[in-house]
Length: 132
Image (cartoon, rainbow, N blue to C red; front, side, top):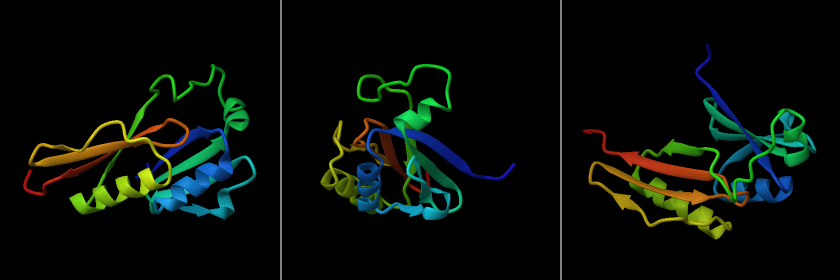
């Protein structure tokens, strides 16, 4: 099995979602994108997301689509290399329109904070001290 994760996330407005994630530094692969979906690189080669329009996403499932603004369907957790990288990503997300649900939590050996993207999906960023 290849060591790769691809998340499929429904979005209300594909262009706005692409602009949001571009603003925080994620890139897109046009080769695997269309008017219904955009292939987003989060961690090049290992973690990607397919942002799909809600109608297209609904065609892939046989259950109702969860409204991420009303209920949490998952929390996407990403490990950052440094505290500074984490703070920078949070600042970029906030500037791009993300909601920041809580202040950073500093446990000494671990530091984390999250954001809610423009479609309500929760992203948690974590830095863990190498000696931990």
